[in-house]
Image (cartoon, rainbow, N blue to C red; front, side, top):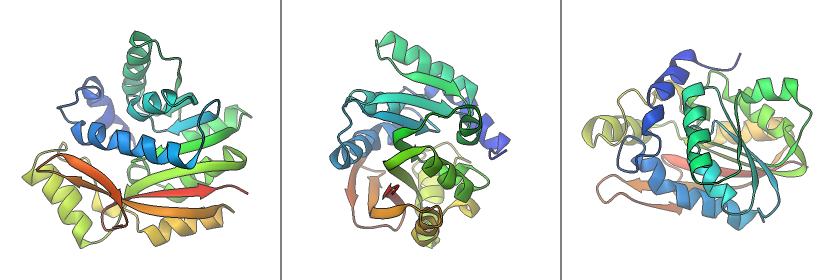
Length: 230
């Protein structure tokens, strides 16, 4: 099973905080509009079926729902899913949330999706290569895949762990493990080995002092990948 139980518990413990825009997930709330805009700039989402893998409390899922997608959100952390369901219901958003891994979903369902998103998840699973393959397998032909994670280098260790978790305290300590960070070259190879085409890679910068973010061409720390299934 491609889940790290400690990682699941970590996010389950944080479930109540998902929608607190000034709390532990503040950076996610800051970058979320950027991620949603990037995805919607590449794909016309209106009426498209979209699977958000590792959806947590539903921050991205709701943003993509608001852009017209028919969204299913899955996560292995049940408490986060319950928060996501509650928040969507309270805001009259029709999103299908399920407590599941991508691997479980593909075993129990034949449904394929127009778009699959898996953002800030790959650095939390034991086998990111398998997760990328599963995400691609869950796509329809000509489907679109969006991934994001953290580069593996000294700068990302200083920025994403030392800076974010210990100096600026913008993420809970222990959120990230350096050993699980992934170089863009590795992630690109996972995509190609699963017979998909890497279309574009972009960097994502978050300023911990101003709490502003932007998408750029610097892949040094956080980055996004857009791929297509043939």
